[in-house]
Image 1 (spheres, rainbow, N blue to C red):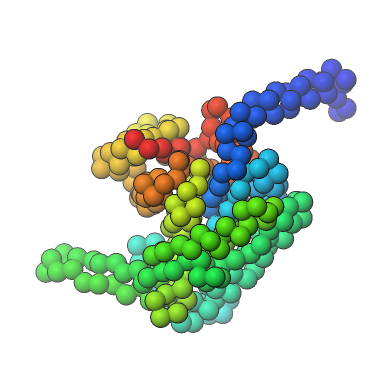
Image 2 (cartoon, rainbow, N blue to C red):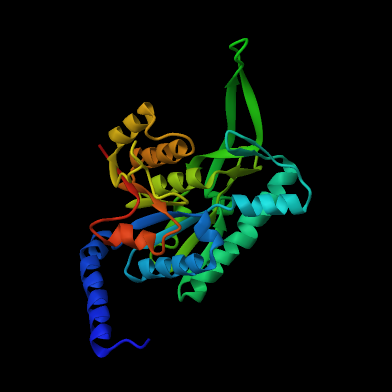
Length: 302
């Protein structure tokens, strides 16, 4: 059904109103860095993927500097299965041996990274794909986990193989893009103390990069609405102290705990605010950044 002149006029006025509302936020964040961890459903849905790329281009166009850090767990899992390489998880972390790390790096630094770069380019932007190995961007150390034996009460160290955690970020690698229109797209692969390649959790990598660049915001795109209270209602904003209390009381539980802890560490490292966003919703980053109501759950200092 064709829209009438009045309907078109109302739609155009609504769009103008949205742009007008966004202006103060654009001015607030112009010249600042925003780190976005991209993954989950948004990466698997082509329409959401396209819209995400356009949103990143828009941010750069209005003077905000987006940095994209991406995951790729399902894609890695699919490739390992295709190559008949068995994979094991401990506490949500993939145990990574020599054969697995080759696949992890191939998928993350190769197909996924270049696909994101390509989509941003197709949307009219300019992007460059990096891994944490490039220029020593992410210096990492081996990550270990301990598990207590319930019978003997003795803790033993669990070897996760070539799994790492960021030890130092070299922000000067990203500084090279500051005065350009280039959007860095980073695969969470790090360099270990002996030059070995280490697989790093994308959330953790994004948090470390956000802290090192003193980002205005760090956004984690997830497959949930955000942090929910005991009645399953969305909590739109939490102070760091409130988030810590919610973990202690069990309001925040399960897989949300490490995400919130990463947000808290990023804020304590110098990030102004960090948010858990629903990547299944179109334009979720723009809604959180440019509207008074925001989106998801924003965590701030305090």
